[in-house]
Image 1 (cartoon, helix red, strand yellow):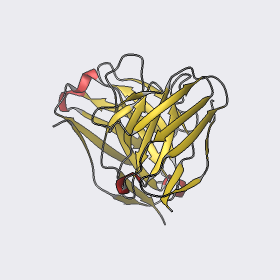
Image 2 (cartoon, chains in turn cyan, blue; image 1 turned 180 degrees about the vertical axis):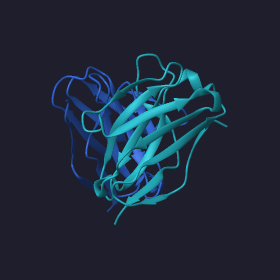
Image 3 (spheres, rainbow over the protein chains, first blue to last red; image 1 turned 90 degrees about the vertical axis):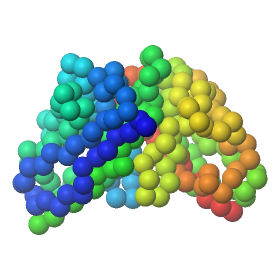
Length: 121
Length: 108
């Protein structure tokens, strides 16, 4: 079964660092980009960025650039989303998602279960 | 950045009826558009990509159309499991990939 399994919920204080993970299984991890998508409480979907696990090339949204780091360890089929200094406004559900195989298309067909991040003093 | 605008914000439809959801792009995205369904407490589910191609295992009652700046998701005969929030997403000019704000499809 193709799946992405994310790490568990986190509760942090402002200014703390955090890394959440997304482990792929059931497919060749290096063949598919992984994206991170944020969903703030009661709000819509926001694409944060993506990584190509084969070479770790990344792209970020303007709002995420410089605030988060996306990385991957292909040896363990895992992608990461990392913050060096959290803000209360980072409180959200974070999903990882796999880009579909169809060439030239950027739909996301396999999603992790989501990781809830709560940042509060 | 391309802005995606969905309408209406909420759509009330009876089971068995047809639902039509709209998505407009601030500039042409060709056919590089996807649709997702999200139910409460669940991750999004890809329904359509390439504006009109159904994703794997998506029922035929879901169909997508449009190109350029105007797109439509049609659900031909609503089932109880179809009541959810629907998002469109463009990937023609990226980064960033951008989503619409969503349409909530509710039972009338």
